[in-house]
Image 1 (cartoon, rainbow, N blue to C red):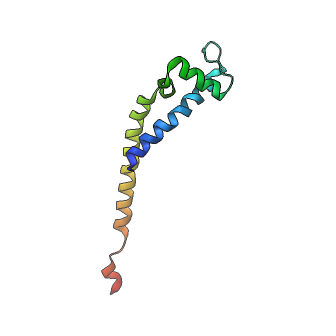
Image 2: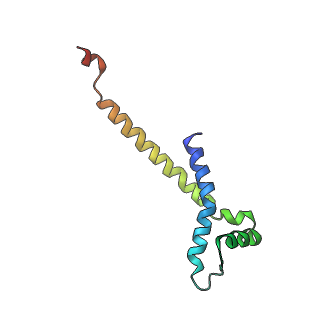
Image 3: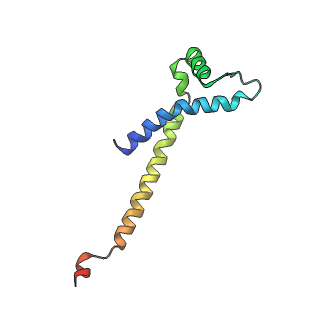
Length: 96
């Protein structure tokens, strides 16, 4: 599997737990409307009230953030690798 597709897969897989984490963070804030008793209760209520799409709220902005981040990581890796490869002495000089 290629790097970009792995990042997208990880983002979509992690998004469900990210939604739950954020909901539980604001669960303690008054007036936010989210009151869950447990993890299973949260999943059940989110799916019942918002559908399966509720588990993926905010995924589009997150995916738009992942692409430039991956590109900059890949670019820096390639530049550093090329730099260090250029420092390697040539083999024919070593054989003399």
